[in-house]
Length: 260
Ligand code: NAD
Image (cartoon, rainbow, N blue to C red):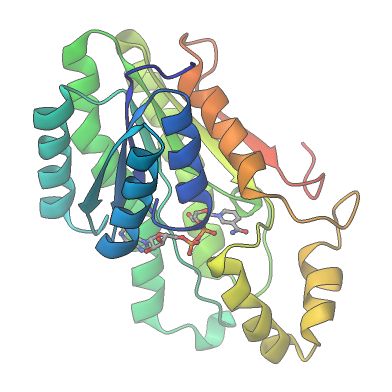
């Protein structure tokens, strides 16, 4: 088991990519905290883990609320004794051409992706320092941390910003063995992407099939979606990698859509 008794907080873990990471970490022996806006769905994931013999707790958390983030991290430390792994994964998508992008939606996007990453990092780092063991912080970036697409100004801006945060946390964390890395998935068929297909079809004047083939998967080497399992495997690698040799990095998992 690669994460035996490691305490792992995963935000946005009630659905999609975060849920698969939580299930994978639990199978590898982690004590997993399913932190999500959707408490009922988070509880269902925690129950599935517990039924399968793992250890998990569900926590209601809006990652944009400093008070809620701090309260959940304090409760986790009280229950499990510390924090070893943070996966800052909660995210949403809102698409508009820039000239029509409502300022409120722009601020919401930056708050969930960037404030959320900052607040959860700030809350966990002192515990990783105090334990003397350090820890692993993983940000859920995107190919859009490296590349742009039309209609996604806020998402692309936020996902690029995570790379800067990751590099800074890596430099500050080095002496405490706190590593930080970014995972950059291509399109994964989660509820977040299912919602975008009709939205992009309407905005671009294409059929939904063409949005998938000619927009989302056009640049991949094989026309395939990345899967939640693909992303969870990378999240396991970063979480289980114990030395500072692997820090400040961003790894693209996208069927070759973006190559660096
Ligand atoms: P999803 O919609 O399946 O899951 C997102 C989860 O985040 C939901 O459970 C939701 O309740 C939670 N959430 C939303 N706002 C929150 C908040 N303020 N506080 C706490 N939880 C909140 O989406 P997903 O596709 O699994 O996306 C997860 C992450 O992966 C996001 O950061 C997304 O940008 C990123 N990502 C997704 C894809 C993709 O193609 N699906 C590709 C690259 C990156």
